[in-house]
Length: 327
Image (cartoon, rainbow, N blue to C red; front, side, top):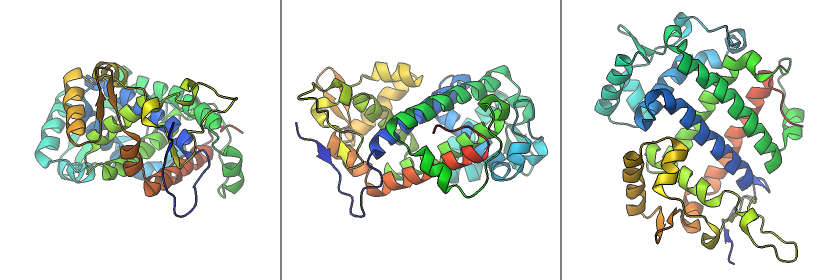
């Protein structure tokens, strides 16, 4: 078995970086699935709606008001939400203006966003009070708990982070007590991840997310599937090590459609484009994989370091918001 490796010219960022990022990948895909449920699992409108809300609360998230309006029953007034224009959304998402405009019209028709004349769009308190949207917050809180456990198991150094954190943390509370504050931090972090991944995939966010879904399915529990010889199991958590192709588990379009809650035809077309681009390889009738050499090219040293830096800052933000981290 030949383990694919990636060269790191400036030293390996963390000995277990790949394991940490795999845990983070699973959480990001989970956030997308949660966010898409009220929008009939349609990817493009979900991302646009997600971005509208994130832009509305960006300044609030980075201020003391995030904790002031952090409780589940303490939503910030609409006046504190910063409207965003369709033009700005198209620029942020690198999508054609007309595509964004059409999707926004649909979101408005469903009552999922409100247009403020001469200013832009907001997701208002009235909209967010809808049961299916409030449920997103609760599900997101559960997902965060899962992520923290997974990161701890993967070897994320929470103790070092807490020692290095210069800003005093808020008093630790159970996640639901500051559900909204934590949700806004997760929203901002996810959009930052989108930006990093989009740049790695020719400015196409949809391709980036679906690439990540395939590679996550391919490499999930890879070490557990290796036949142990003399008690030795390959260390697929290392930053410079990737799971070889022969150990990648192919995934079908149907299986991914169910996992991501994305319509089959939408996913089939997107994955077909990735296959045409040489990003995906079809393994007979078993399904698709991202070959290790392709993953090495896309998830290079710069991307790994950037993602680890963003994740660390997210964990610091959570600690400062009062989330009790492992360790």
